[in-house]
Length: 554
Image 1: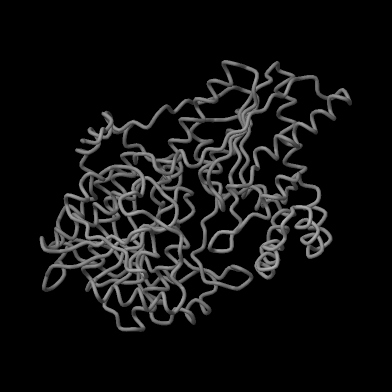
Image 2 (image 1 turned 135 degrees about the vertical axis):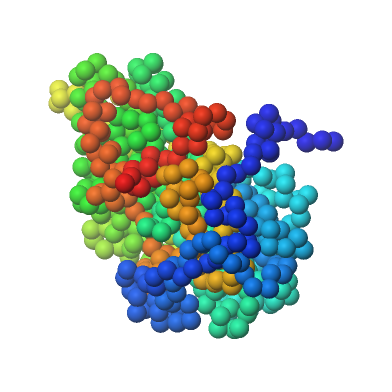
């Protein structure tokens, strides 16, 4: 029985991703040149101590020149790590086509189910017949993904053994900051153990927080923010049409507000909360609630008992008193995990936690609604982080704004209506068919990874630049993973991790937003982006995010 496919799937199957000019030349006409030595902006001595063999490498640039000497068939392994992001399959198809450009007998192995697939030796050889149906599709279902870390000695040794068994010239790890930190650990270990397998990372996360001056964006961010912006635009139109609901929309982004900011620039909602601004202004939860309530009040005085408010997923961790509370909870739950797991009732959990918290944090914890307390005590992820997507911050704000407005109504300060609705846009964007930008970008990332592997470069992450220009003008290369790191506390211990890129309040995207938001508050200045366009004029179908355009404007 033939599997049914949609009209769009059929049309996208034949899409040929656009390549940077340098990658059109073929491996025999590409050289890899060293740029300046790259070092982390902070904690350099400690990072060097942990990664002595791969620290201090140079930034890499692909340029016209002679290809690798003694070209032969090469073997590569690839693994998808962490949450899904649109374009992951195109990274793999780019790798597949790239190794065949090196030599038709080259082979590609996909490790199944994420990093665990490496050290448990679960892999499949990726052939043309297997790979081709996945071209330009969303999702990670080609080989699956996972969040396991490679950190124990026996896991590292098992990875070494499987890479040697398959005679891998390189292992490509497609993931976010934690996954690429894992890549750095594995690269260091392989150099130490004289394993010939290079380890190369690819920047993936829809959150957009894996970037710097060299890595301009992570893949998936473009598609996800456009999917969410379509939905937000639809809600803005409905809000203006029905004129009776306030929509509180929580958006993906556990550690940074890039998606919220990009969606705001695309849709112009009435209220936008940026977590980094909350932190910079040291705003309390009460102050955030009051600022929202004031906008609701002002709009009601204009006869507008409706509106749209965007909330970043990770807002709760940007609020100073809550951030301190979460830090204390993380340590308590790590230090007393075995005992805490034996406590059966929520009342007993509350009592135990309040005994361990500082006085101020105990007060904050007790002041929160019971369902938020339960969410704060939920099981941590594999990295010891609170799973903030499970915290219904949008509902917390709705509850507290409703209470404040009810008080104001009794006092005669508020005479309008407040009928709130809560939304969370998260999984809707993670596996969408990649936009043309992400389809092109991810394919270029895959092809670039192969070039770096062919030249024996290890401990680096692929970087494709000049992304605000047409794809033909993009530039390709790589940057040392150790240069992206800093030391952070994980599970109560100082740990080397790739530093997350937060929204910069002095950056062009935030400044553009700040210059317009007052106008958006009372005016219904909504913009309706509509669905992602895959065909037609380049200024509609190939346009990058507003964030990229603003950040890279000359």
